[in-house]
Each structure stands twice: as structure tokens, then as C-alpha cells.
Image (cartoon, rainbow, N blue to C red; front, top):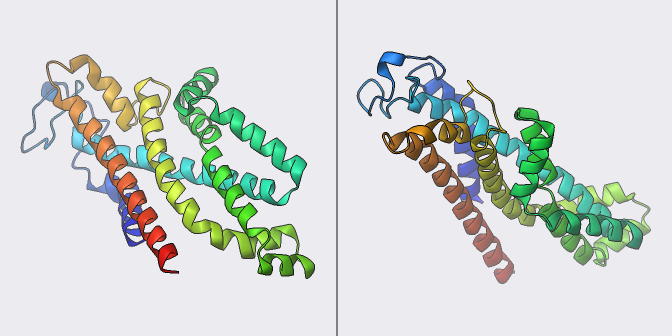
Length: 264
């Protein structure tokens, strides 16, 4: 849990304070310094329009990480609600929700997100909608599975006999038990959201110029990939590092929770 908390703290710090650390204006065009190599003035060099790459990466964290954080929370809320409804709502509700979930899972998430974003048009809101619609199913399965295992527990049965509403039972008895499992799933979906945002940005469906975003930076750099490969390496390296760190934190959390279950 400590590694996940530290990671979340670092991500929130970059989202809030990253732009304040930028040494230059990320959208300022400086043609005389276009495609400059890394140096004292531009630590990571400049792009084809002379914009400082480091400043764009720091500002881009607010979009790439911030949007991924927001999208993963939307998926968490939708998926948990549907999973608990399937576990508590009876056979008909369970069948309807799970068949809908299986239908969404039948399509590759990124491909479906690209299709939805393409139909809606390029832009930030279409990006959020596309990735949110395709990012809730795993939460639903986990919430339903844990919910079904808790349904026959003594304290849940007593709460039902005491006349507590399904919402109250879900709030006080299901959610605390769901939190560890959902946190593990959330770390993986957060990493997927970063990849999804970068992929849609690279395809031109994400955050639109001149706003800096890591995927759109890759899109801008592809033309000069042979002559100045560092333009493409820096944003790609940042995306890979963030996704790898989040996945490693999720694995550590899963192992810690498994150890706790073994000791108990």
C-alpha cells in the first residue's frame, strides 16, 4: 500500500506542480532554435517549432496523467456500481449486467476506443468518453465476484434481517471488502488509460494542439524520427516509465495483499 500511495503522491505532484517546474513556455514557437540538441538552455532539446521538449513534457503530465487518473476513477465508479448491482440485484439483473459486460469485453478496448473517438470527432471530451466507456468491465467482474462471496456471510445476512437497504449494506459491508481488490485493478487500468490517451493522441484523436500531450508529441516528432530521434525518444520514454512504474506498484500491492491473506 505504501508504494501505491507514494506513486499516487508523485503523480498528483506532477499534475499540480509539473507546469510550474517548466523552464520555458511549452507553446512558444522559436524557429531559430528549432530541432536544437540537448544543451544548457534546452535540457532535452527542442521540437520542429523550437518549443522546449522538457517544458512540454512537464505540462503534458497534466493532460496525460491527469486525464488517465480521471478516466480510471470514472471506470472504477461505473464498474463497482454495476458489479454490486449484479451481486445484489437478483438473477435477472445479474444476467443483464454480466451479458453486457461480456459483450464489451469481446472487443479490444483500444480498438473500440479508437472507433468511438473517431465517430465523435477529435477532442478531449471524446477522448474521455471513449476511454471511460471501454474501461469499466474489469471492475464489474471483480466487484460482482467479491459481492457474491460476501452475500452469504453472517454479518451481511444479519444486516438484511435488520432491514438495512441494499445501498446501506453495500456502503458498510461490501465496499470495505472490495477496496483492496479494486485498488489492484485500478493500478492496472490507470496504466492502460495512460497508454490509451497516448495512443489516441498519436492517432490525432486526443488532446488537440497546441496543448502539449505525450501522445501528440510523438505524433509531431514522427516526421523527424530519422534526423532527430530524441524528439520521439523523450515522450516515449516518459510513457513507458510511467506505465512500468504503475504496473510494478500494482504487482507489489497484489503481493502484499496476498501475504496478508496468507497470514490471516
